[in-house]
Length: 141
Image 1 (tube, rainbow, N blue to C red):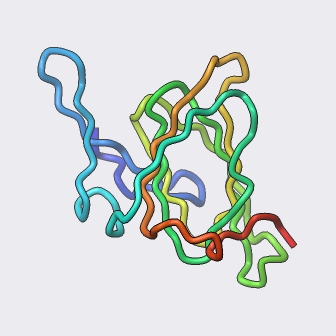
Image 2 (image 1 turned 180 degrees about the vertical axis):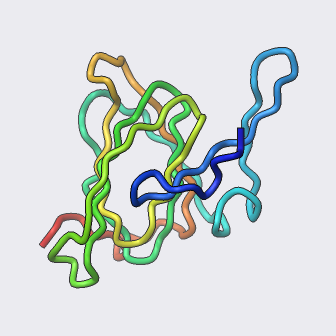
């Protein structure tokens, strides 16, 4: 594990969690300033249940999202700076803490538990900024 840090999945950046095997289970960890390309100011987690979530982008905040239970399907669209058009779109699936996705400013995201018959999934998110409602782009103009 760890060999994929910073390698791209399409047009988003992929991060692999670090792990050490000590019998069982595997310990995965993230170290500030080592595995995340920004200083971590906020950490939050989401329990997802089949409904789509997200539907926003940030103007300045960067995030790295890991799925620590189940699978999460991510749809990411890079907004142009005018916030009215999309430069590109990509979809990917993350699961079981093995990989995370870097979400840069102006990346409009929506996500859901995947596949649809999953009971629920949990996302763990590291953010470069404290919560600021003015940083959000809630819907495409």
